[in-house]
Image (tube, rainbow, N blue to C red; front, side, top):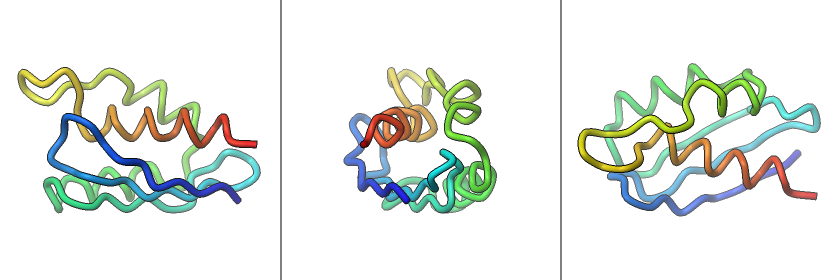
Length: 85
């Protein structure tokens, strides 16, 4: 199992807590801060998905005029956890 607590940048959420199994399948995601209902939905949708599939689908999503979003920050965190040894 791999685990990360990722400090977000440029979003309303402040932290993303992620656990990924040895097959790079997301086991759990918790967002701290942000739009609670939307982020619970994102968390449930990505749980059970492969890291690379989630990155492919959500990378680069923007929130209004911001250059990033909570789903985009999730992808950045997933990239980091993917590269953990």
